[in-house]
Amino acid sequence: MKDSKGEKSISRLPSRRDFLKTGVALGLSGIGGKAVAKGSSRVTLYTSMPSKYSNPAVKIFNDLNTGVHVDLFYSTTYQVLQRVIAETSANRLIADIMLIADPGPYLDLKARGELLDYVTPHIDMYPPGQRDVDGLWVNGRTIATIFAFNHRVLSINDAPKSWAEFADADWMNMLGAMDVRQGGTAYSWYYSTRSHPDLGLRWWKKLAKTNLVLTRGHGALMDRMVAGELPITEQLDYYVWEKVRNKKAPVTPVYPPEVIPISLAPIAILRRGPNNEGAKVFYDWWLSKHGQETIAGINGIYSPRSDVAPLPGKPPFNSLNTMDIDLTEFSKSREALQKEFTQIFGL
Image 1 (tube, one colour):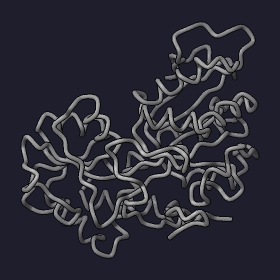
Image 2 (image 1 turned 180 degrees about the vertical axis):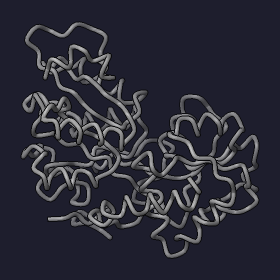
Image 3 (image 1 turned 90 degrees about the vertical axis):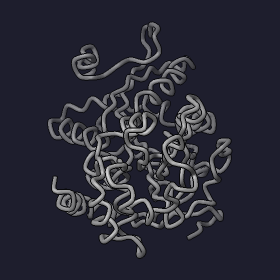
C-alpha cells in the first residue's frame, strides 16, 4: 500500500519535580555528565529504547545547551506503559515524554485525553502511516524484525533463508527469540507472522516444537548467538547492524521473503507531565532531520523521514516486504494473542 508521497504505508490509522531529586531510587538517570545551568528546564523521558542507545542520544541533545535537560528512565515496552498508567491513575505523573515500541497504547492515551494537543513543526516530513491523524504522536523509530545466524557455526548455504525454514525441525535446540509478552517488537513479530496467510498459527505451533529459547530482550539473544549457544535467533535488524559494524561479530542477517514485521516506536508528550514546554523542545529535536540522523547513526534504525538516508549496509526500507497493519485491531488483539502465545509454549 502506498501513501500520497509514494512511500510504503505500514498502518491504517484511526481518525513532583521533587521525585527527580530521588531519581536513583526511581530508576531515573540524568544524562550528559555535567552540571545543568541554574534555571534550566528538566524533562523526563520514559522509553523502551535500550539504554545503550537512548543514553548517548539524550546526551547529544543535552550537550546542545538548549536550556532543556533530559532525564531518562528505561525499561521494556510494557513495563514502561504500566508505570505511566500507574502514575496517571495516581495523578503523580513524572514522565513528560513517552517513546515505546507499540503504537497501540498511544491510541488509548489519546482517547483518554492524556496526550498533549501539540503538533510538531516537522509533522509534514512524516507520511500518514507514520503519525497520528491529529498529529499528537509521531513514529520516532522504525524497527524491522528479522532473524540472524552465527556463520561460524552454520554456513550460509546451510542456514535458513525464510521464516518457513526458521521453524524447521532441523534447528531443534538451536533457536532463540524474545518473549512476546515482554516487548512491543516481539508482539509485532507475533502479530505479523500470525496474520500471514503462509505462516499463521500452524507455523507458531511448529516453531514451539523446536524448543525455542525465550528471553526478555534481544541483547541477551545476540550475546548467546555470537557465543554460538543459540546459532539462530529472531532479531531486530539494528542489533545485527550494530554488532557487525562495531564488533565485527560473526553474524549474518536474513530478511525473510514472506514478511518483515515492522514496529513503530511512537513518541508523544504526556499532557499531565510536569514540563510540557520543555518537552516540546526535546520532542521537536527528536523528530527533526538532525535528531533522526543522530538516532539512526547511534541506533541503526530506519527513520520515517524521507530526507534521512538509509544507513550503509542496510537494504532500503522500500525494498522490504512489509505488511499493512490496522493499529486499532493490532492494539485490541494484544491481550488475546499474548494469551495464545503462552498456551502454545506452555508458559
